[in-house]
Length: 463
Image (cartoon, rainbow, N blue to C red; front, side, top):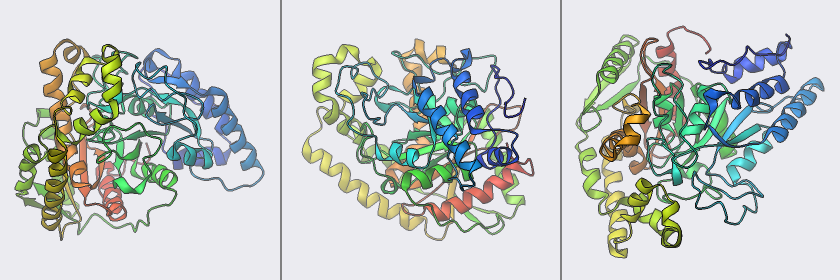
């Protein structure tokens, strides 16, 4: 049928890239309305259980119809107009309380206005299909949620694996083909971790690029408003919308790139799948003319000490939740409450010390990275563990959480920018390759990511 996508299945293939969808719509073989209707139908399928906490069916279909009407009238549409986009349940939407993956906020006052990132997506005409599930208060890289259920990573039909967090539902919404992009956030890896575990591209921009107002705070020092999608170009389209200005990306070939490979911390404890995929990726990049330079970068080993006691996330989250914890702690995920409580005993002097040490560390690391186009490493050192194992054991949960956050957090601590690109073979569970650079280097890093992505795809064409 004209304008109809193939029926959803449990193993639903992801939507094509935005450029491919735009071409199909321009040819008349697909409409915005049909695309959004299919996404909403898929959101009710068993595979999408626990992905959304709220759907905006009427508004999304209205945005799609508006895009169809405008296109027929010859209006040139913005890249996201009429296309399904999901938004993490961390962002204010006017008229409803922002739950942030919790039940402790369900009786709180509704938001007076949309968060700027949400408002800008609306301005671009995006069809916002719904709010996506997440780790409670964004405080975990695993993606489990005992209140609203845990979205299942769709990349393994045999084992129910974690989606990664905290932007768990955002990732699964894209992986299942229910959205072309998922607006999420990244405080210690919450975009890049689920992107890596679900075979997607995640872009953590420089924190200052997008306003954080209207986003439920975890750590004001580290929180970043950003998104994940199917490819680098699609991530850049979303970034341009939520930042209200596109990056000036000057595309370049992979040959001649000079990438730093840190020898400290980020290559430790790689599981067999990640190690194999990473080594294969290094080989492909080298053949393509990329110069990969081992760099000690011993400063990475200092983070755990410099970020003590408590760390920015615990200290700043405790400031946000102090009253809520005192009154409603029984409604918190116990694992989240325990992590937030670590910030209670940290003094103002200790907190100021955290900032002072970080500033000094950033200056030293930025100096080390001069002369490189980016650094690269595995996004996370392990593939997605089974949900059941981490639900059953605090020890297994916190061990996995620490491993998942380890590499990605280094870039948040650096106040830098980063992409995660899928680099697994077709018969492997998803593995992410992280490319990162210093703050404000988003445009140059995007050019690097596009060049590396082209090498990794190796002529496969649009997905």
